[in-house]
Image (cartoon, rainbow, N blue to C red):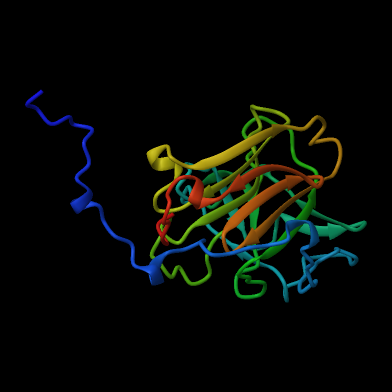
Amino acid sequence: GRKVSDAYVDPDKIEEVAEEDMKTVGYEYDYDNLTYELVWADEFDYEGLPDDSKWDYDTGGHGWGNNELQYYTAGDNAYVKDGHLYIEARKEEKEGMDYSSSRMVSTGKGDWLYGKIEVSAKLPSDLGTWPAIWMLPTDWEYGGWPASGEIDIMEHVGYDQNRIHASVHTESYHHKINTQKTSTRIVEGVSDEFHVYSIEWLPDKIMAYIDGELYFTFDPKDYKKTPNYKE
């Protein structure tokens, strides 16, 4: 035919990625023999408020980009007892909001690039809850969300009991444009028993586990041959 297909890609117009800008390429591992050194932990073997040398709080009630209905307090809703950390969501008026809770962060007190993160947790079961164990940047090197990334180790939505989510958000892949990379797994009794939610964050990929079982791998090379920081 005489007409060039809309699907045609002119090879002369393909954007070249400089070698120094390529990410997640050129790594080789013996995955079965990776070892880790413990550099940070909180076993909650004390009583009272969470250890302020390890934990801080995000505070406020402006919705946090998710239309959240609670006001996050500076520790009023979190305490340690009998070897466990408790985070309580309460139905109460707080600073103009109808609910209160705590949003604990390790920013500036426990910050890492690559490694293995493990959290043992028992989750709430009520409708309207959305517990999450997640990681955001300290330095926001590539710009605001989602350009500098987000790693969701565990998310659980109260109306979908026992379904666990692990996700990665980047400039190219995130939920606002419906391109986020995610996986889910049904785990019976997440609100009755403790389970271990973990990730291995390596220079070329992120792997998520529940109780040691791999169920999600984010490898940018699966989606683009020469990924850069946007992926």
